[in-house]
Length: 95
Image 1: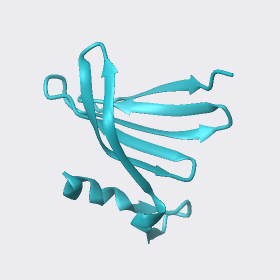
Image 2: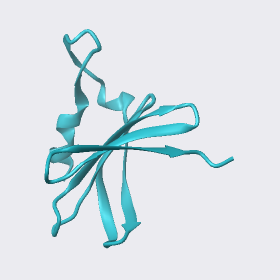
Image 3: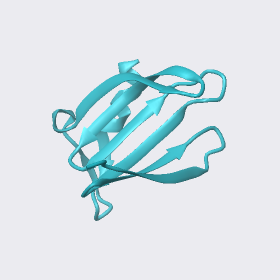
Image 4: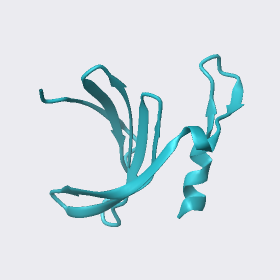
C-alpha cells in the first residue's frame, strides 16, 4: 500500500517548476472514517504545512480523494470520487 502513496511526495512549486518535496517534511497518517456506509479505511494520508490530503477506500462506490488547506479556523476541502468531479466543502472549528 505504501508504494501507491509514495507518488504523493513529488509536488510542483507555486512557480510551476518541478521540485521534489522531502518525504520527511510531510507527516503521513492512516486510520478509519465513519459515515453512512460504515467504517472505511483512510490511506495515503499526508499533512504538510497547512495542506492535508487522504484517500478513503470504498470498494462499492470507488475511492474518494480528499484535499484541502487550513485557513484560520476553517478547513477548506474538496472531495473527488468516481465521477472525477471535485466537490468543495468547508469545515469550521467549534469554539
